[in-house]
Amino acid sequence: MTAPITSPPAPGEAEDPPRTTGAEQPGDDFDRDVLPSPPGATAALLRSLLAPLRARVTFTVLFLLLQQAAVQAGPLLVAYAIDRAVPAFRDGDHGPLVAVGAGYLLCSLAAGALQYGFIAASARVNQDVLLDLRGRIFRHAQALSVDFHERYTSGRLISRSTTDVESLRELLSEGLQELITVVLSFVYISAMLLWLDLGLGAVAVASFGPLYALVRTYQRRAGRVYRQRSTAIAAVIVKFVETMNGIRPVRAFRREAANDADFAALNRRHERTNGNALLEMARYVVGSRLVANTTVAGIVLWGAYRVADGTLALGVLAAAVLYLRRLYDPIDRLGMFLNSYQSAAASLEKIAGLLAQTPSVPEPATPRELPPPVSEHPGREVVFDAVRFGYRTGGEVLPRFDLTIPAGQTVAVVGSTGAGKSTLAKLLARFYDPSGGRVLLDGTDLRDLAVPELRRGVVMVTQEAFLFSGTVAENIAIGRPEATREEIERAAKAIGAHDFIAALPDGYDTDVRKRGGRISAGQRQLVAFARALLADPAVLILDEATSSLDVPGERAVQRAMTTVLKGRTAVVIAHRLSTVEIADRVLVMEHGRIVEDGAPAELIAGTGRFADLHRAWRDSLA
Ligand SMILES: Nc1ncnc2c1ncn2[C@@H]1O[C@H](COP(=O)(O)OP(=O)(O)O)[C@@H](O)[C@H]1O
Ligand SMILES: [Mg+2]
Image (cartoon, rainbow, N blue to C red; front, side):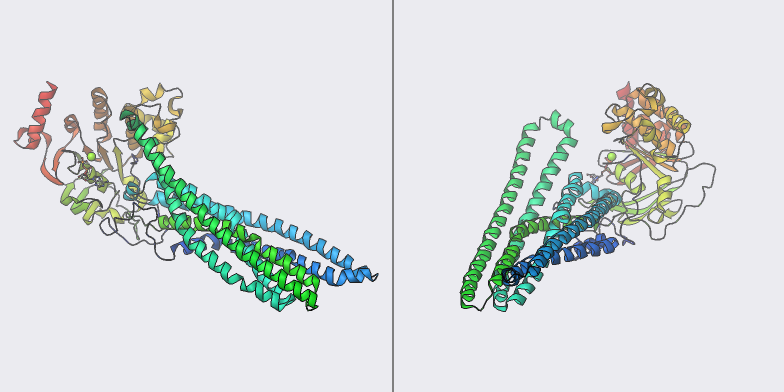
């Protein structure tokens, strides 16, 4: 997706990212869902999310700690009732039984109140964490350079900020409470059992060994399955988004049946991984129940013998069985919790990988301002100084490129498809940084230029004139949101867009939602021109920006261009040679090199490539 107005990247999350160029970063890994991230990135992300909420997290845990203490007092009170209060009651002493009843009631009330406090406190923590995380993903993805977005599909980004954030939400809202509760109850109950009766306690504690082994095995295996599952669901989303984004070519080339088949296959793969996850879960549940029930049976049997012997009080045995039930009850849920933990961990890992990406076009560490323009015109000098550049995925596109464009000059660039014209434009707009050499604006390296300066300095209009949701006026004013309605209309009039805009249902206030659906491609380009004109840049780049206009429309724009470009430095990449007429200078590019360079009349009169091209074009018009 190429926005028509060039905006240098906003500040990244990293305080001072190292300056890297396209050539230095690894170019693989982008086909996988998990981007490479430094070790410990996931844990660091979690810490940084929770750090601002430390006080509230502490409160939340405290509520749960107290709540568990109140809950786990229950069986102890039962033991006391059976062994002391009931015999005392039989002897006519009501006191202990009333005390036990009151204590039980009090503990239940306290547990309820504390649970309420916990839920309220944790809900706020969860919401803050998720809010923060979604914001970070958006800001970071937006700050990443164009080449990142060319390789990391928008479908994947969507699945990061929906599916992955959602699985974290599940963990935080349900799973985490479960984990802390289970861990706390294990600690409390083990202590109680050991205190009540060392032997019974030891048997219960011994059962933790096999349970722990089961949990670890489950974690390991489910972790793998969950990663597969979330990759599979991401693939489903990517396919969906890509198909709907490309619905026109899908229709035009009758791709529906093939897409259905692809989508069905991806969907099935997701189902399969889902099934595998459930199987792992089932194995775990069955195994852990076996351990739990065997232990309970053993304790009941041994306890009964000892009660008969008189070495164990009946109340203590009852309390032990109650405790064991409480201990093993949440084990199924522990499996479920581990599910959500696994999938949240997998999601967090992916999010951390995304957030660890640094912009390949980083902001300058010490940004520089441009000197004030020398003349009253806004134009500035552009220099390509021994620039070398290649995309990550291909060979060198510009082998060694030298070019000086004096301030205020309009340069037309022509050349066959793939010659490197757009690449030249994108380097000048700083979508990419060169792997060698420098691009200078009035003597300042674009890499050192302060972001607002670059934004004001260089604006590019491409053939893909993207309109954002909002009104036509808002779309024109994107480069200068503070512009008045008069300024917006003046820009539209200068470019010849006013008449069609005025004819829209709400004129300048017409909503262009759905990718400018109500506006034709040519009209979109006119809006993009008006937008660029209003932004008032020193350097204007037009990359086949009139390609959707008909010949009269293009003529009209060209006439307007002569006023618009006056005093600005302009690079006009032309797809029709008529554009060349407004240029001061023509460059012919082939294979990343300038093969001809001169005034239009001079080249036309000569015997070079451009003269041939121009003659052929003249003939075609006749
Ligand atoms: N995003 C990209 N990733 C990889 N290669 C690219 C990319 N964009 C362009 N190229 C390659 O760079 C070369 C020059 O492309 P480009 O500058 O778009 O040419 P032009 O605009 O003159 O048609 C072509 O070989 C093209 O395949
Ligand atoms: Mg091009």
